Image (cartoon, rainbow, N blue to C red; front, side, top):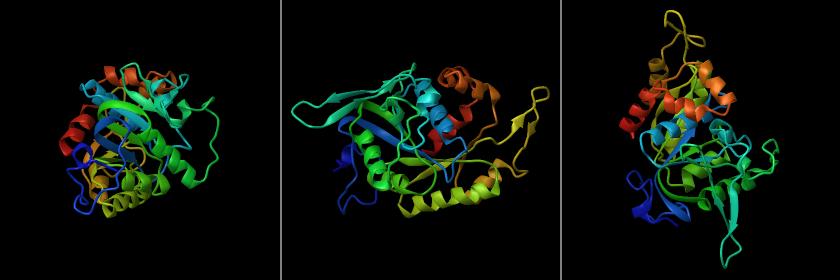
Length: 280
């Protein structure tokens, strides 16, 4: 059960008088919990999670990342820690265990199912209740210590995990990731409506793969849609946090396991972090 004074969503919660069933972590205190979500896969949600986490760390905040995409975890790859493994410690005088997250080069604490399995390619073939149970345990039983922000990289869609996170975890707000296509915007809209129905704040949308920038003249070339990022955000009815281009340098850094270093040394994401903090 949650203690309202230490709950990340106390400022936006509407259930204080009725009693609260939000779950808090056992081993630490978290000031803000941010879900990063989309209506469908392939839009770069995990990449946006990694960039936002790195930018927050660059700004001096203590940051953690929970890889909530249980069947398709990719956060260890973003941070180049996929060869490492989280430690599992027995809790004294108990049958429970606690997870020691892997820390990135910049000190971001990451827990992912791929850090708990012997091989990262090993699939999990589980039904919904088991998946949500594992997600909840990774959240509650990880030694987060003191965090300013915990970012949850959520699976696409409006399924079991999204529902569990929005209903059971004290989420401060959601960042939505989309791409510039009407079909994608329609699917993303479903996630936004779901969050609104559950009383979860939407911070804004990041339009990923918004354009390609010419290396010679700097012109922004729209690839998927002639509409502007602002038009797509207006359709979704939420603030635009940033429009991010297709960036082969970032892709190259991801393939080398150096994306965190690339973001730390690159000023191209100032718009994202500035608008994120403004709309929080």
